[in-house]
Image (cartoon, rainbow over all chains, first blue to last red; front, top):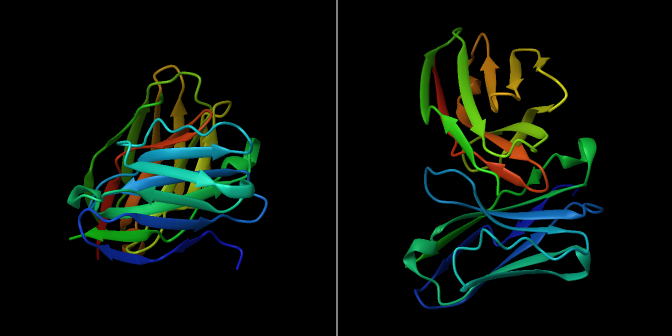
Length: 115
Length: 109
């Protein structure tokens, strides 16, 4: 199992509930990204973790969104008080850092549906 | 931060024809330009990349060109096949990775 793993693959929730999405990056990858892909749309950057540096949170759309990365490995994206417009596929990617190591490896995503 | 624009948003070609997708980027310091292919229900996968010290790179039927002065880069697919049908994303990277909006390529048999 050398790839990026995301769970759950599908999540249906009611408006106003909180959700947590999990990403297990490839072992040894120091960089981890979260992207959001709305139906038929491009990849919207959300947040970027690189090693022990402070994360780049510039893409988070509101203060309802947060993410953490524990021990430099697993990451959790949390959406509080979900809204219908949060419905999308949330993709996680990881990479090594520098030179050829900048290639991103994506998980299959979590399809979030907010009813 | 970096801003990447991609055109066209949809592209339909006949099998055997060539397809070209173009992107522009805003930050002249960006130094790495990958292209990803996303098939239905899957995450994007890297198909080819180019670094800022190279003007062109080929891998079988796909090629990428980079014009640093104009901040343009393009993906060229020759002899297209139905299995090339997918969504293609360009990206530009300096410290993180920003993607274009994607191009849905349809290759008609």
